[in-house]
Length: 215
Image 1 (cartoon, helix red, strand yellow):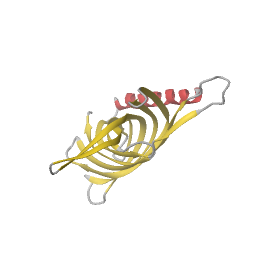
Image 2 (image 1 turned 90 degrees about the vertical axis):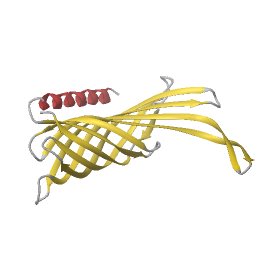
Image 3 (image 1 turned 90 degrees about the horizontal axis):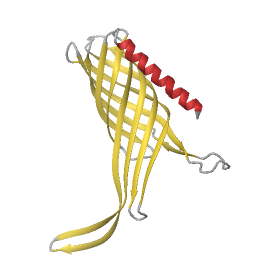
Image 4 (image 1 turned 180 degrees about the vertical axis):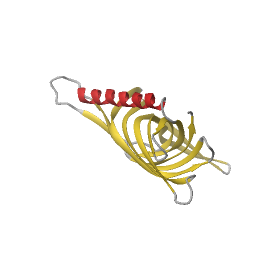
């Protein structure tokens, strides 16, 4: 547990160092939206942003976050009737779920312009991440509400295309793979063997965004 906390603190320090460096070099803000399909929870949309420092025309380093949230309901059919020419179906809500995933990441991006133009090209990205999952459940049958928090280290890899639409703005389209398993300690008594509950957030997705020069 202490090792994870140490890694998390180092991760934040690296991110803050990136922000400090960005104040001295050419820097951008990346704002994006997209879609993610995690293995152990429902798929959904995401939004995010990052602060990017450009070492040169080809290599960037950035520190950012994504916000993925999905709400869904478990229902049971309780009745079905016909009114005139209309079929009416009644459902009972059993459980309401809300999942919120927040990955913090430190990323390295390499741009590969085409031979004909430096305006259009390809890029590859690799990221080290520390991810949080906040789970909210309302069970109407048992009249129980539960909140759980999970966390864990992970990584992301992606690749896509970029197009410079102006001197200070660039459009991006990227396919991504998120690899992360988050967990929490569920041991109730000190004399029990350690028990960990895990959720696999690994999955494919995509992001569309824009980079805006701020310096």
